[in-house]
Image: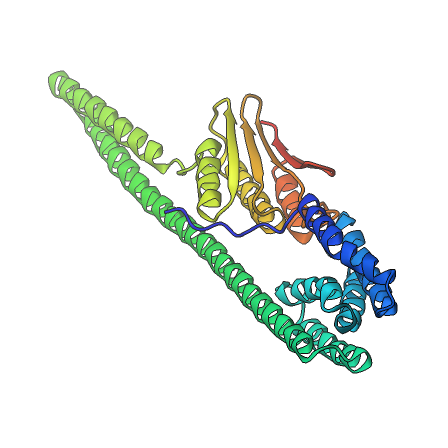
Length: 373
């Protein structure tokens, strides 16, 4: 069953487009007020908030110290000038309040501060400009509606994040149970192999002992019969041993099967991925385990840092094993992901089996795991 995909944050182009439309619609009214005698100071203050809105939208990242300062300017200037501009200049403040309150990664204190600060400045501007009662009521209603809608959005995003975290934990738990079950099955097969060899070799020792006794007694016909019995017993034991050894091979020793399963789970969790399999081989179990852990770590990072984009997973087994995971960057992607604890631990695991890890920064973000055999 395909699970709903989390909504990716709006990109820089979308934010800039929305801010541009707002600047055209709001700026025209504010510029007209600057030329009039009616509260030109309020219009000037509102224009400052409008410029901060456009500048923030043009920033390459959504969250930074500069972006937060611009948010504060939007809220302060827009709220203070709302009453004096008949709510025309209130738009940047409402956008700023919405951004702060709806961001589920921010603490609650900034959200409460944004709403209360806007309300206080709105009241101060109302006292100074004395607008009609309907304007003051409309301003309070707009702040309340935006705050409630943003709070609902925040809760929705947090619930989705919690649900995805629970699914991630469920996948990890299922994989761990699968590993434990595989180890138990290997132990059972090892016992079966021991029983097969003990039975076959024990019977063969008995037959050879009897054969030696028949030869010492000069009973050649009986000795020949014992030899035929020993040969049949050895043939049967060899077949049983081969079947037991074949069954003892670790499930998932084909890295392609493991990677294909992880990509399918990635898609089930809402991620998007393109899988490219090249070549075929059967690697050692410890190498396949490293490839599995690498693919799991990189796909988890892709869902966490670049939701909504398509990750390309390439597994090349023509000469050893080479796993390449490529993820385009988004506005929400951190500047560097090469030094995180997850990738550091991954590098240690890969090096333990004689492999290497290469991290290519930039856009797209690429990690190459290579184990030569």
